[in-house]
Amino acid sequence: MNQEFTQAVPADAPAPGKIMLVGIGPGSVDHMTQRARAAIAEADVVIGYVTYIKLVADLVEGKEIIRKSMTEELDRAVSALASARAGKKVALISSGDAGVYGMAGPTFEVLFQSGWTPDDEVQVEIIPGASALNSCAALVGAPLTHDFCAISLSDLLTPWPTIARRLDAVAMADFVVALYNPKSGRRTRQIVEAQRLFLRHRRPDTPVAIVKSAYRRRENIVFTTLDSMADADIGMLSTVLIGNSNTFVRNGLMVTPRGYANKYDMDDGGSTRDGEKAGRSLSTGLLGWLETLQAEHAAGADIATLAARHRLPADYIQATLDEPLDAAALASATEESEA
Image (cartoon, rainbow, N blue to C red; front, side, top):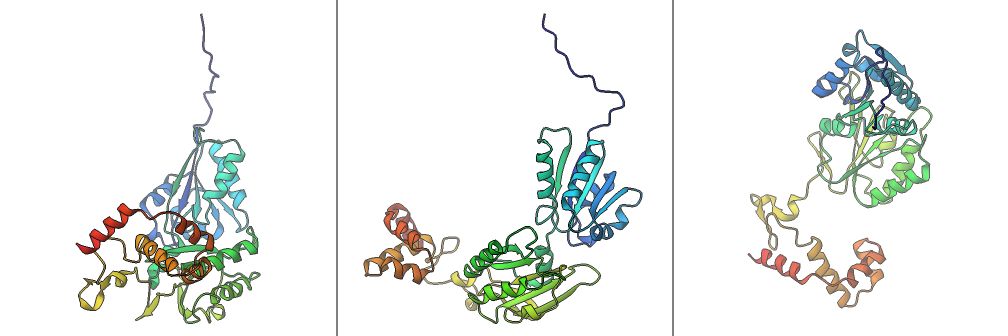
């Protein structure tokens, strides 16, 4: 007769703990999610950078508080795991969102290093919050309405050539860009180098907004331009928003158009422009561009000329030309355009 044996659990063994990675948003309690507030309320232990602890001081009275410095992210994660293993509920807080330059990444690194898996008795919950780029954008208008990205200028953990390549690539690709960690007391040249790289591809008068301490007591907003941004008051509590080629500032608001003017005549009540159709790809969308590319090549333009004209890699242009056009898709697009 087979008999199963299970390891006896001591009666006084602590219940499994939990790590809650809490994004507290920009710092104002009014801009925290309800779940973030609830997580802090139910926590036995609150762990965070000293400044972040101060931002939620009214929510942590009577709790065990573990304060860490700016460079002790891994220590925070190790402390959180130790407390959770002891059966405690832990709120490990990050400003903004825990998954955007926050504590989610280093915490999972520590967890995996310890042998933790999602089936472990220690539970992990990620509680999202508004990141700095969202908060800062809301204060200055609508700069992120079109494609954007975020790049940290901190080279404490990332080699500068890697950062520089990313800056150059997104500047050339015309993204709206949010620069995190743009400058500190010891890191003063990084913002100058970022400006230098952007000016290779962008107009000097490209709009820039610099938001410091968004939604906090010392909030400060400055509108400037790309050629002047490095002269502005910028620090570790600042986020720098660099517009794309279409971004503008009007009446104190920074706005990046979504592209409606490409399809609709905004001066004629929003009527559809000739050759365009509401709800369909632009005539210069993928299929229209493929037809144009084929026609240009047939007219004698070589691969290098087409690559330079469209600012795309030559091997991509070649591969695109080598692939036959989808006749059915083109016919469908023509029918839609003519309807």
